[in-house]
Image 1: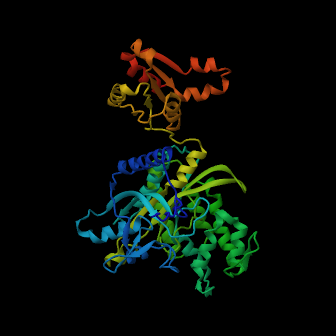
Image 2 (image 1 turned 30 degrees about the vertical axis):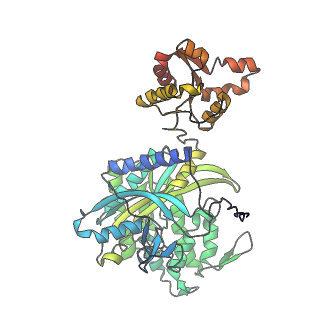
Image 3 (image 1 turned 45 degrees about the vertical axis):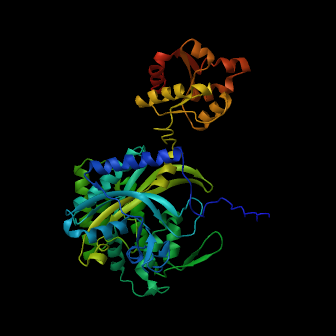
Length: 496
């Protein structure tokens, strides 16, 4: 009796998810460790929360309140309660603080890294699972905690290899824009939503559309290159001009000192209670940053920063990479790799009392892409250094002993565990990005020696080799040493 042929399942990843291996994992570990070392240096403690939270907890923190049931991966648990994969790391922190409030030190300072999930349409460079590294201070309502976030943000970005001049931390306060809009005395709604929110959403597109694009969105509307029309906010020309003047200060902020930017804001716009409060908060933050000695080109005041339209309540910060890069659209600035700000209302939704909080979040995927573009990735760092080839299968235990002795000296090594010949083993070592291959064949065994083949050097000279005899000699890429001197020679090569 013949068995029914089983249907072959096609191996494929779900849309918006990616596999990481080798140097990608090494780079992720390097970035995470570098940034977390900075957070630890500032006295923050590590926290790990689960990747699943109750959906009503997650839902409180979705940035788009118009779609509270979208954007997350959710399922019903066996207790009939809906749970969701975490959308960000902040919701888990808020739940943890509300649940353990009485036992935690106040303020509570924590950092956390991990995967977060967005049930959104994937696209080029936009994934549904990505890695974030956060730091937050919960229970502090003063300028020191906000200034510290900016300074720690700067130190964290620089720790990954991004040099001063290639990044900037942009500092602003959501209340500045609230105060300016309030002074315009604008009434009414736009497209069924609050007009203030519509103005902020238009301003949030400044980096992508420029001043002229924002001006159109604040007015009657804008038609993009595809012909699609976006209805505008419908402001009067005088009000648009006021907002554009405000944005121009943001554009010029890179040329101004922090104090000069504050003075320009104070002199150019009509003061009201909200506006005055915002400038005073920024002034206090600036005094602390200045006293700590942070360069003006590391942390700037940029009032055009708009983050988390329904999320942040005061100071906001954004980490931008400022170097130029080539894209399909031409030369562009790399842009944001993270952000944060003060959010005083989130924990209150779970605790019932006000718990002032501030924090930052670094997007590792964006940062990793930037380092690759700058050619600053830590390729093969802490990766495989040595592969010991098995030239005689009856002597596997002896070859393994060599690999074991190398590991005892802290050298990442492996003994080839396959069944291929020498050519296949060298190809394997090459694919594993190993630096060295150890070869002990008949000739080496007879003279109690070992051949060290430098695979990286071999790649560099391969194009210059003219014949097979020269390749076999390996005069510039390998050397034979006494077996007793193998470890010292390996160490010497790896230290070069």
